[in-house]
Image 1: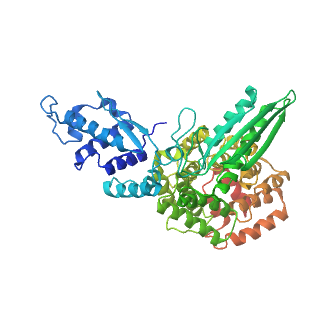
Image 2 (image 1 turned 180 degrees about the horizontal axis):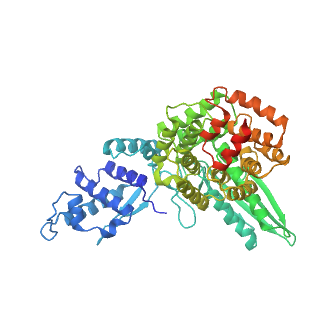
Image 3 (image 1 turned 120 degrees about the vertical axis):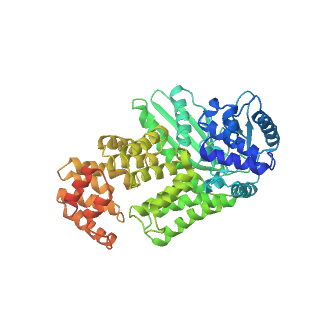
Length: 535
């Protein structure tokens, strides 16, 4: 993946401008900016002296490069200025090879003080004034170019992060190809969770974030494949997570692989073992630790109906972004929270929650795909936006499937919208069945697709046995779904319970339950069936 993207270019240009390597004249900065924009879309191949002279230096259409050497002179000055910049830069190296206009950017990360970098980045944004959003402040500090930008090399590894815990994987005693493949699987799962940052085993990552190591051991006997992995912090004696997994050789290898995925996912998901442990230890920058903890609070708050708890984690996310210590995941988590408000699951804390979510998503831009929390927000937003287009949502889900097939939280949201919004219930059911093999099962929403699928396709008492698994006391749509199943199955117990809940949840609802269902803009078939049975 290229380092060049809309948001990254602004960050790099900010840093160059602040360095004063280009001097006080805006001419070189204008030239470098123009070249970066052309490189973004590979248009540098078509650049000529004539177009640069006209577009950058304001020459007229009768410009003749044989008579006017301004482009050659300024390119010589720019290359010389970049050599000065590169000699002093702690973050980027920028080269424009002679004979063309291609820009080559590489990163350096030499342990700059994080407070200094953030102050420097913020001031450069204000000074240059390219309309760069707050996300630039978040990402600028050499930072976690990998964890925030998703910039990985061919092995899936990335640079050290200053914003999320760094983690590596090593192996001992894996003695056959079967067990060795699980080693690769563990790295793949880790790379799909942006709550951690995967780095090579020998990377020190000093003065950054908590550093964790996964040690994998395997054994293969004539009857059993077994796998053990331990996760430790700093020292091998400080074990924070331990798993023993095994499967008989007669069983499908997928059983072991799914157990591996589930164990890793439960460890590194935003509210998993490793993030929770990370929030309790010392970081090089305590403000970054506090910002990282906001997502744990957010997920904990989902299961707590108290408004004060909700307000607390919402304020935490907003404060993290305002302070400049947020990650792309923080933007995604806050956007998802606003989208919940828009859907009616929470009280509004901003005048227009949908628009607030949109702005946060646009701040990240094309890099949304590199943040698992932002991917969730993007999927929900594409489902809820007033100008909804099925093809746009399908494309978002398709990109998600290519990148996050072993991230159960992301794929659950993709599966829910595949069914509830697109009406592709066969695919949604297949996705749901796969998710359940790698999901801890504590989240009742993992059964929502099963419930809706049963509601649409069954007509007997077994409906309620399936639907009740999706029951959530304080969720409007979960109660509507279970109540509809109860009415269809003629189950008075569940009908009475959901009626009682809905009376409390929608006491101030503008209109009937059927009206609420219509406003949710679900798949037309599901909408019609829910309206038929919800009252």
